Image (cartoon, rainbow, N blue to C red; front, side, top):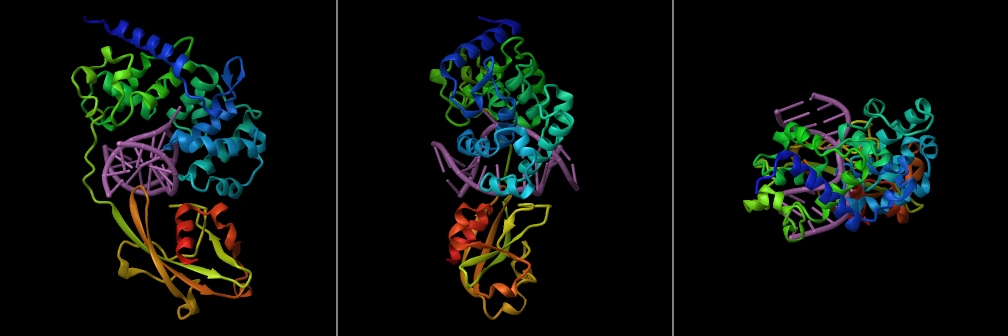
Amino acid sequence: MNLSKKSKEILIKSDILNWYKKNKRDLPWRKASRKSLPNPYHIFVSEFMLQQTTVGTVKKRFNEFIKKWPSLDDLASKSESTILNFWSGLGYYSRARNLLKASKIIKKKHASKIPDNYNDLIILPGIGEYTAKAILGIAYNKSVMPLDANIERIFVRLYGFKSPILKIKSELKILSNSYISKKFSNQLIQGFMDFGSIICTPRNPNCIDCIIKNNCIAFKKNLQKTIPIKSKSNQLKKKKYSRAYIFYNENNEILVRRRSSKGMLASMLEIPNDRWVIDKNKLVYDKIVQNLKKKIQYKGSIEYSFSHFDLETEVFFANVKKNHFLKYKWMKKNNFKKSGLPTVMKKIIEVAI
DNA sequence: AAGACGGGGTA
DNA sequence: TACCCAGTCTT
């Protein structure tokens, strides 16, 4: 039977809403605070954390975050290094810096209330179209449809689009607008997200339990495993090289310093290391090594994988006197695991000690 | 339009 | 190991 376009949309919306009532995930930022809607500050924080990061990873870190900074004012009064230190292990550190900047703007310009309109949200640092709509829809039940990876995947399968998602963003956006709920936006958005996460999964979707498969072109053509189409990623991952130096003082402390505010791991603490280079033969000793070249002792090397290149680092170690490095910060050896160092730096320390 | 930007989870 | 994730910003 051929359903008209309109009734297909209506059926799917109502199916997802019903499915959501029985199957919604219990997530910490969803706790209702006002009339079945969540705390907007919680949604604001969770949406920053969830950018390119899985729900499972965010769950624990979100609770820690809210415990430390329960309100927007608590957050807005903190320093960038405090937030970056917390963000260790989550990656994409510009999110942390933007989250703090945005909170300061909201405190100043919006009396500490998370904005409930698109124009005020979209100008905030770190908030793009997706996050603005997610906050509007989830925290304020506004009629919008944000397009995240889950919802995009559901739509390309429902409509059997045989192009990489990147190529058809504008079509998906138009399509998603016909799936906006007037009254139950909050539930429909999160319903799609949960459905994508539990049933319409990236690999091996659970079509057996899918309650909208009769309206799914990918399912009918048995293309659910090939849609979404992957864009060709035949280019080799770049490789870069570095050397890192563990300077260890008489108080069992390790020397650390802050990175520049631009580029990889911006403004994060680091173990001293040489500038990362493509050509291993072009490595240049960092200034801090200077006259210690004879003292440093090779401890091993690590291979660390970032999203767009791999980094091979040889790790060296030297015992030093604390008062020879007056300008630098030190970290107790036993504290490094809980510290705000990026993960790659923690791996470097593990090789040396 | 394409690349930069982390790190943990999963099959 | 390769791929994926409640994306955004810069070039």
